[in-house]
Image (cartoon, rainbow, N blue to C red):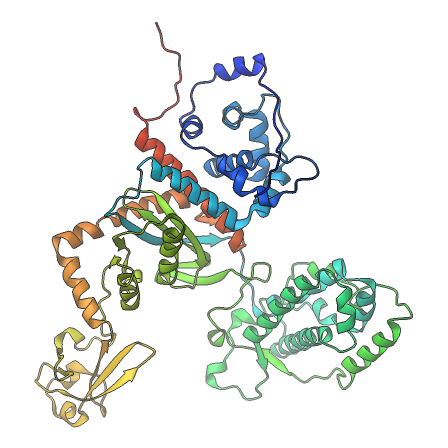
Length: 596
């Protein structure tokens, strides 16, 4: 904790008092000013500033600016204009009427300075103030959790262009920040494949050769950073840590989208037309700013690096005469990992699905709130991550910082896995969620027609036959039970029970079958139905976060930046809820003065 002195504004003039007194009461800003004390931000953010130098603006003031921006859902530049010309905002921020000192870059840099942890702390501090006003925190409180997609406006590209962009990103960073010795040695690199442009109707053989050459040069670029004569030069590079991150991105893109060439590909290795010629044409123009093909960076050599340059160049070029042989090929799209990078400028973006009809390119935002509508925690996760994975950690964060835990946690079917139910039960929290009903995809007899005997540990089929053996399945966390194949072959209902002609029928029993049965009984009770009906509260809060606060579709591509915006949106939604609950009559703008 440091004793930092912040900038203070002069006392309001008579003109300021006269101007602000004529304004009507704002339904949101005035109520928030009376309800919430933001002085805590000056204390928790003091570690970000030095005692020396020019006095900074108070963090409490800048936090209120961020909240106004989240409430209005506007950009940094528009926020700068609103601070200059909107008297409602100036009055809520306690700024003089003629003040126009905040630049849009100041607002953006302050978000980066505070970071994800500081905004989460501000969210928790405001939650504590709402708790003191008895807006949440009852003894038998029920919490609700759900997720919604946050679509990122990015255009996906194919393997050829993805690798090319990763190489260009690494080379440009080296060109901007590397010392002269590194740039001089980098002249040994061959990067002429970055300037290859193919027409959409180019022959497949030409496309394969271009892709193989690009991948070969990409691996050569990564090898160059590990060369014994180059490693000592990298110690002079102050920004080499960022270069290592870009190298890792390029290395991962190569492993996910390319593989050694197979001369005789099998039927499963067929290439899709959408991933061959289409992504070689019309590059972004980034390659136009690169140096000539013979050199990666245009820097004069000096006496200290000429020998290194020649040695590395000779080793890289040895045995690499240009031939018409394909060394690498694209990995078929179906064989690429699901957790792969789709944009090199946004490596955390993933592709996933919310349901069968809602694909996601971006992230998912987990929202945990009380049954009264107070948002307790928000978490930005990759779109391909399962909804249930973040639930326990989100509850633990609130429990750790505020000492509060629910009696019941409500979620949809995605949160109702048996392992999560037992984990929440170990914390004295009951997880209430619908139980997924397993269905036979073949349309044959469903598992509900089979009876399980816990004492014998066997299943009995509709014809009275029992299972004869079982096999443990660790992946699915359960046991597969098998009927006798001979009995199934002679069974009159075989065609209605199984599609297998030689093997018998089998059924699966989860390790959490007892937990699921208890959950089903509770969900069918009156209390269970009333508890599940509370899920509509979190749906309304998701609507506010998605539409009103702009989290549903955003231009932000970084997860940490979107996480900061999510915390600010959660604070705004909570403040709006508090105003609606505690203000009587309901807030509204006073449009005309009262008549005597």
